[in-house]
Length: 250
Image 1 (cartoon, rainbow, N blue to C red):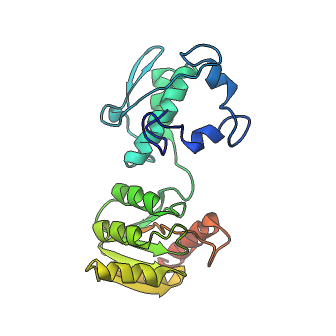
Image 2 (cartoon, rainbow, N blue to C red; image 1 turned 60 degrees about the vertical axis):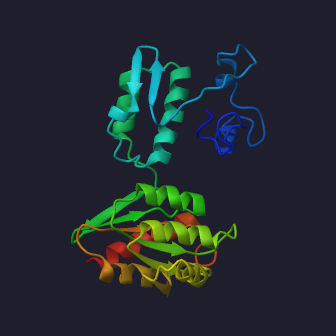
């Protein structure tokens, strides 16, 4: 399942897929998938796929993911995830209708492009799991526009400039929080992007976003940074975001 891996086609498998093996990180993949690969027992097969033609051959026909409604799986990165899952299901004997139903009814996972609600025509999305610059770019590509983005926290990879580039490319307005929020703001200024505020805290950011947002727009928490300066973890940050959003829109 190569395209979804971080190295691209022909490289080592994605660490996420590798860790799914029963032996844990760095061990062999799950014996079930390993032994049932087309390369024969003990020889893993390599399955290539592309989002340009998201088709999967199953035991009872062809599944075209381009024709399957997947409301909880928006964006190219989630199409890659769906393709990887579909190919695993194919190896394990899944059927077309089973997969169609599974993708169409999947409700999503908390803190990953999680729809919080809509008030006064403004949609709120909790994507607190977005903790690095690459995840930020993928998330904002999938976010309905125009959008206001709440970003910031602890920049774990010294990627302030990359974070700023994504924000400038996709956001109508940016609310910055946390330890490295001001540094991201300075990077935005260097790019000539001035539609931002440093609000320090998440609660201030949500309140300011509500004041700025117009009907038809989206407010998304997509930090691009770790949470440890102000929260226990990304889940705590996401739960606080949801609580504050509901509170300020009462």
